[in-house]
Length: 351
Image (cartoon, rainbow, N blue to C red; front, side, top):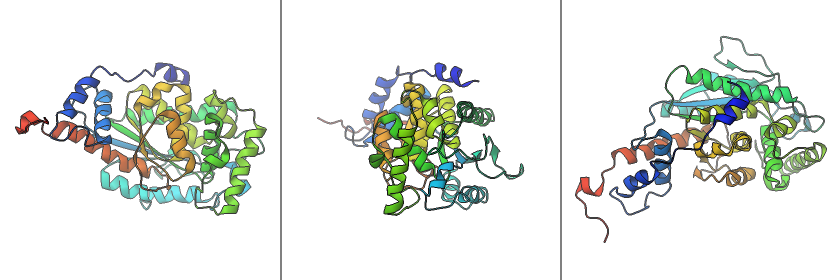
């Protein structure tokens, strides 16, 4: 399906069982509201699944990789070559996201959206490359409008290909791309109107001087490009990344199929912000996996009205926060399904 058709086809979550879901969770053997956000997650999952016994049997996580021309401005602690090297680390099972996916039984998919390296067809990488990296958005637009559309369409296509292979109860999104916190920060600034000083963080662990350079780079880029803050495609084209476009496309397609989506950190949330700009109903299908220490992440989440499930002071990316949060979501579903009610346990209710 094409991008416009997907966007128009996304509808709000069905809230017809919301009252029944709250009644069920409120009548569990616990003080009212004592399980906090676990209760909200359980109710949202019930609505998403359309029944009062939601379950997560099949979990998918997709890591989207791409390179960024903005690395020419020395805004990262690592050289661009690390993107491809880390993709190989994913393929060899040695990254943090591999450990978490093995531990939680999550199917991991690595998608090349625009890495400045051509992976052999037998490596296991899903090839959705638009081209080998974006342009330096301090000198010109990150990509053409056609390339921006292609990146979103490729994200839609990869979701549909995975979805068509079998059942899927939830999907998490992750990222890999040296320089992509600069791109994500620029996207968040463009959409929210916040200043680069409030949004840009240390990314890969940059020092004070590099952070100031990163802030100034984003500030100058926003001044150079006449970005329409209401046009997601324009934002993506001017300062985005191919992997961010892929994340946007997958989020759109998952919401169209009414599949819950778990975000990771600032990069995937920038992709979600673009999807939200396309169609605000996206929010109903999103879970914010965690709160990154990247300053702009929390601002982007608040813009969409999302509350993070975890806060572990992380800023790794790769989908690690999403993978961890999936288990919390699973536990929330199990509480809804397995925890006894006051009547079942023959426990007196509150006075």
